[in-house]
Image (cartoon, rainbow, N blue to C red; front, side):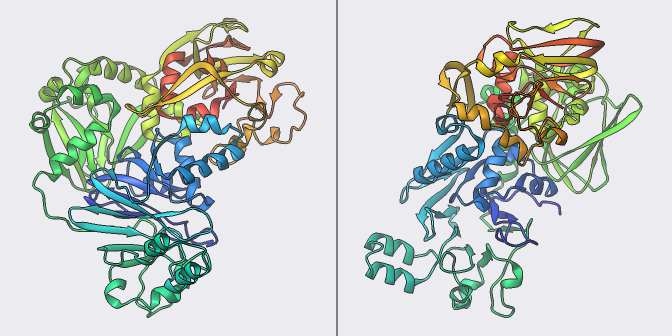
Length: 592
């Protein structure tokens, strides 16, 4: 299914059913406001769903978490592992529940997770503003604290019930029995049925709304309502209730704005980290508009061709494009979606295009000519950074990242950010890459040759890792410092549970999972600490890199080769943008 233009105001369903439906995905969706997305209770497979819909995760920068049942919060934590840092909107009570739960699951302390996550605490009755939409939260009636909301933009309203038992008779009985007060009674009773679009759950009472309650609603409400959190087979035919499918998008029409396309282009451009300095320079939005053209391409049309001179820079606003290139006699390809960009390399290097780009469906792109592009990046380090990126990509960095079982699962945004951090370095046979006691200068992704890593198990077991993790609320990035914060002993022993469960496979391989004695050679708490590795392996004393301690391992080159080296400060910066790099690699020495 191809995603239409990103809506000005609407929803795209990531799932519409419940956790006990073998044929459906748990309910979650993207709330769109001014072409930017906020995921609401993202299902665990939401990243894959967005890929199938050709939606770049770059245009979705926040999550609304309604409550902490696993069919509603698992996707939020998985997004944290696999993609860039994201803002969570929820109440203090729900956030603390989330922290306690994932502390128990992962073994990381609650203090550590609180410092790791960027949360905007919302209050009932006080509006929050997300991408220009006014979001007003209210309590629902569920077994644990749970919030629904209304979103208002351009005079239109979308309401979401969240998990609830919506029955006036039940509310009144609970009030009469003294279970709830008058304020909560009024809030629960006055559900915003007058909204222009209503997403309302249904399910098994008493923790969900009985289908019979929704069937009794008048036709004028049913016409603008969609039933979610229910298997489609459980919705009676002919009752007037409608359901949605995964991938469906529903849009509310707002008054047409002639500047919508231009605003969309600027908005997408501002989400690309690389161009943040230029966006700061061009504070006058009108000046940016003069640089941008809007172009459309038909399905199958060649947008750029390898060997042609570079004359434009492209940012995809709609649709999906396939990028294909040849390296070492093999043809490789990847997909670009909304928010992804291409064409920059030839503009900054002066070299011809190095890849073909074809539209898979209808594609709409914002383009910037060579002259305007040079004006746009003038006075910044963008040109130097892009030249470095072009050189790294010419050495097959993308394919190398995709060969590692962990980094292969990162989003394209994360992979590109990792490429920016890389430097190629060669090693000769017998060379000591680093030894126990050295400073942790870098981690390395092996490109060729063979290397042997051996950790000093006694040092690893007894060293104390001191980390301070905080969120810079201006940039949304993590700051990883060597400070007074310490991982708990239980954390050291149980962190591997993240790796053994989704989304990452254990780096030790299936044959190693059965190891039970943590005194066994080469393993500490299931983590591989000695081994011979080759192409695609990512190696480093990651705890030392994060905490600035001397390394507790040694690496020797067994066969002449090369590696993409990521210096310590750049690795910490990468993990600041993509916290999964921190969570997964703590305690690790080898991933393959």
